[in-house]
Image (cartoon, rainbow, N blue to C red; front, side, top):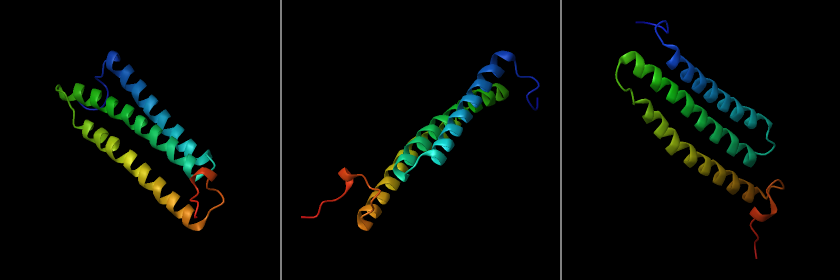
Length: 119
């Protein structure tokens, strides 16, 4: 069986909902990246939305692949685990690097409570 011709409605509906949900969350993250004003604001929305958006697409892929293969397909979980591990670490490293740069340059855009006070 090739394509989506033999997919029953009871499976097609949840797969479609998960794909639409995942892609919508990813789109929201991209929109937040474009619209939020500062780098620090832009860090949060894309990372959360993209992680959850990818999760929706991964679940849809697992459901559809499991149906077509007639056995549980779980290797997509590795992608989800990799994202869950790397996205927060990347967010933290980018944030710390930007904070270090802004403190070194004494950036006026840095919030007052984050500026280093030299004695």
